[in-house]
Image (tube, rainbow, N blue to C red):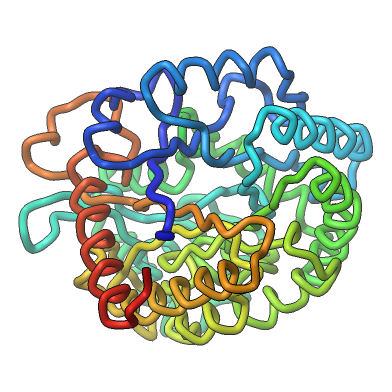
Length: 397
């Protein structure tokens, strides 16, 4: 038994083909039906259609990532109950077709946040990163969000102003476009006006209210998932701290403990994204992995270089500040426990996440930031080698 090696594929419009993916050594595909509007049901017909494409390439559909949660569910607004009913039906339809891992998140407005998508890494590859000063400059002087000044110290405000003053028009536009970038699988993004309106919808929603809405959502979907033979996996906030005054409720060990405690069942689980949680120096990823090992349903191993100022840069798996060796060791021991105790599902799917863009692919069009072929291939190779070494050292089969 080994961690199941999978690959994220954005569907027929992904410039990386299933034939290329098969040659990486991955056996499963992680994908989503990005063409279906958020909130609509993923029909059996559409699921089967996608599944047949994957099957015909000699791979299989391992996990759905992501089945997006409509913003009205997060806000408990308008017809949010109808959207929950649609979500329940999508879970049933996926389970009926053998897709038994579903990743989702509860991040308001933005799915992830970066301030630079084209950082030149030390080996010449391209990576992504987050600089708190640049983000503050956007918040204060480009977005000009009401109430923004109150959340920054005087030193942070002055640093952001100096940064902003040093930017010409083109870098300002680039920073704005980067922050407003759309969901993975789509290069569509908010306009500045649309983004401001989206933020305004959350002005009266704090951490406590958003957490209550998430817990309510969990109470609706997990019984359906159990019945359908599906394991849900909530993805952590990326990055794991509040931005733009928005609430964040999946950012640390205490948040995860509360979420998994809403319904104590393997169907209510965690997507362990080491890069998202690991962006904060306050999160000990080995401890988090060990603490919630029995409830980890999906794994995104990646690494970052980070600091106390809440800056981080994504790196190759073996080069960052996160102890991925310790994380993988804890996961492999957990998988062995599941096997020894004859758990119903011992499968532990993982995928290489956010690979760096190598020189030979830098002119390849249509690649979403972090989702190159060769960068993720290197990540998968490093993770595969590390796993083998750990298994040998522990005498695991």
